[in-house]
Length: 202
Image (cartoon, rainbow, N blue to C red; front, side, top):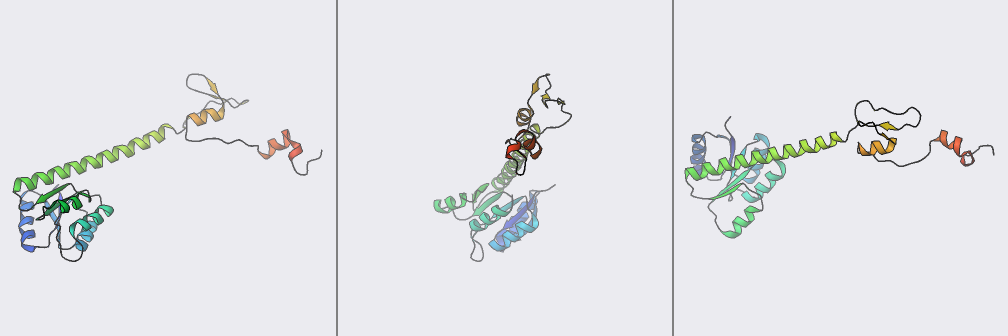
């Protein structure tokens, strides 16, 4: 399936040429925005696989500010395309965590390779996050008690897989996330410490 690209460019002649170029590469332009506000809304609604973002846009919001906002709402890689190559502009753009920064004009091979690298890097990032979540879930499952637990009917010790017997609280603490604090239930309090029970005959 062709990757969906959101194009953010305020110059209609540039966006028309760029859209045709992207489609010739086999990508699908899912939207064209001229301002930061339009870009944020388009990213939310269209869920692109990648955003090509100019820095100088219509309105009060520039592309760097729009990228920060999109990044806080959507998990999507952003490549800046700009005629601005000054160090301070690039430094400001880097703080938006882009997947690339290209200074106009660029050639076809440079544009295409930058997009492909960004898509692959982002997919790898997603896969790494998925594996981390899977590992965290697996570690929680390891700590969960399940199945039949052989327990002594008299002393309530539990037998492990090797045949050893353990105190109930020790076994559960070692095989789960549970911890213990000790006290006395009302029945045991009456039986073993009747002097501490209100109303008990002495």
